[in-house]
Length: 215
Image (cartoon, rainbow, N blue to C red; front, side, top):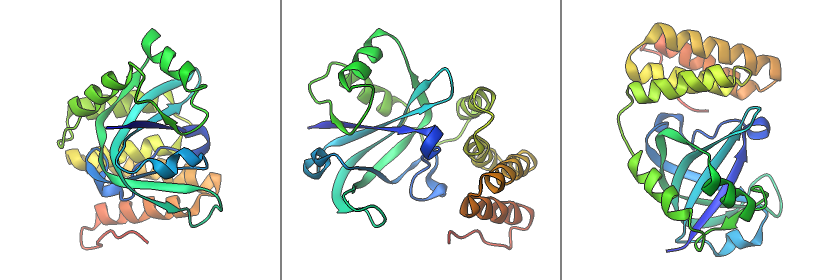
């Protein structure tokens, strides 16, 4: 099996929560996109998404999926999208240390989509992905979300993520508080679709008769 890697900068792209927010911390359809022509031949490969956030930069193994198809991006000519079934780690795992630094250097500081099949750090990544393929949101998940909010409070996505965790844990009051905070920040940033989504989640929590649907 081939192994490939894509990096996502949370400063520019936010947190990747999958193609359906209902799958957060679980399994579902995942994607990455790149202009690198290498992606066109990656069907069948296992793809790792590494997310970088904050200053000083932290890196996390965020999700993992088997690439099933490659399609042109709808909104960006020349960019290709790799799609497949996989899972978000529960919780995502921080990557650090000399072995990880060697991978980052080998990938030119994660400048583009890379094939890492021959790199020795591939096995630890796969082991982590399998170890944290967990379907149940629990105290480990919550500890991760709390730590991320404390480390990167300026990112509205981290409050949205913790809000989803709180919903899974049945803490509606804290979920509403997190989604309200995220909604305000998204509105300030002019990210209207995310602000609207957070508003609909809040309404659905307050009144379960208001079924939440993606638009």
